[in-house]
Length: 258
Length: 336
Image (cartoon, rainbow over all chains, first blue to last red):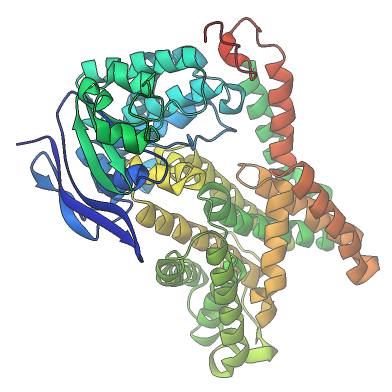
């Protein structure tokens, strides 16, 4: 049984076929990357697995369970986390305040607990705080816990967004272009972080445009073009695949991949 | 630690001031009445703040629910001669039930569609009250709403007693709002305001949370409306008017939307400003308008939000510069 299994998934927006009959498997504990030119359907593919879009046809199995039609928040409870291209953090609040809510899905306190500040509320608040601090430590941002988000760098924000996803206690993390808009040095750091996440037992699946980063880090790569899967394999296989070079690198078979 | 102490001292001072206020103006019913009305509106604006300020869904049906609370109490006490306290409880419950029903429909829309939809819901409530003569008395309104029934030796015949009663409910409302906002539930609401998409991926059921938050906000409006009815003892369809909801919104925005003390600051400021400018009649809007525009442009989080922003900026200057993550300018990469 594959960890995540996508079977013949198709998504149409009106007449446009954004994702076209894609079969794909994600292996547990590995780093899987999805690459492809702009408009290839990578983000749509993510949104399908995540539940933001419902597929026109096909199905998605997570640990053998059909998750094709479940709402986004239920997916999170099962252990599916994701980050966005834009981090969506609340800028006027501190880093820790942003991350604490990540553990909310594992807590049970309700309105009653809030108003009467019951023992459960206090315990769960403390637990959420601890988890948030652990996640921040994991991504190397613990020292910024009490800093306002609007004052930290883009790279720090990306790391905080990853910490927030980690705080949900995921089994798999989908990262949508985590290295977009940051410099090469910081990109290396993020690649290290992704390896660290995978090593800790959390499966990583990422969309990325930075080829050097992907080639050095991914265990498996899928290439999408115009919604369809055109190749799949290890970085070495992808590098030398003529179909990929034609579609992705502009039709020149001699193009270098760095 | 001394910061918390200052904060607490300020709150204690405010409560003491509110408690001794009637003693200062013991013989001035007018001042007490304005203050009491101000407190009632504050309760309502706290409710609006929960859904609009913290959960991020701008509901413009708030005056409609305020009116449902007012009319529920008015009708129950004048038509059925029900005990005031039971009627007050029922008024809040009826308003909440109406909120649950309308919220479940309205929250299917998002952002400005939600604002427009709820504006229309509010106007429909106004029309319903205005046209349903048999139940609400139509344009003539409801008269002779009784004052609260005495509890043991406590009676509410004097303006001072009403003042204390409303003050009690105000403090209770603020207390509950603070508890909610600072809890995990409150963090959930703030996460939804921040980004609904992100909140969903964090495992938050945004539909249910938005609805619960909406019902809480509506319950505040219902309580405020019911208190308003028993204070003024006369209500007309105007309590549901769009003027009313935009007043609430103005108090909230100028005070500080999404802040815990904003509703109190904004409401008290405008309620008293309106009294001072009473002699100018409608022209007081010539002053309110520019205030609102200036606030929205320069202090989008109102007086309270602006205060905290300035404070944060002053503190930030003290932060040591050697930490690379504080530098908002990207560090230049040495290798290419």
